[in-house]
Image (cartoon, rainbow, N blue to C red):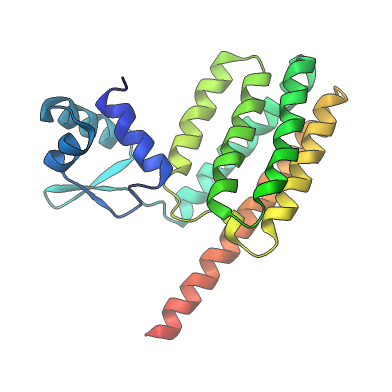
Length: 213
């Protein structure tokens, strides 16, 4: 059975609790069927990891500001690019086939942003594992944990889902060819396009809010 920390973290990652949502100790204990002491300790741990922040006496799920978003994508790009390069060098034939199969299977869920978002995380995690570097995998887990603080997926943007699968295919092809430089470059383009899409979506939403005022 998962501990309170893992349960709360999974709930944030799945979108059950979204940025800005208030987390109440007693409600969490009841939801997950655990006592309040491990919940309290889990909340304190998540606060030290900047997953939660104080709002008066309460804790809420943190939100990334513009600068934090830029910093996160910078780190993610470098680590993911390294993972792709190492995967091209170390991935087994079985791991390459799994990656290729993921891309093919994901075509069936085009048009479902939330399902694609979950599939996207699985795909990237598989690349991390294929790097065969446990320390890199640990660091990327931390980065992707922080990405749960993004309220929306870029895969909801018009046309982004189809383009994403094409980018995934390019990455897999490079890994299958054991071409580290091409895999790294393809991964960097992929993250860059995702970041650009997110910035455009944030600007669009800000403009719509401004027009409502």
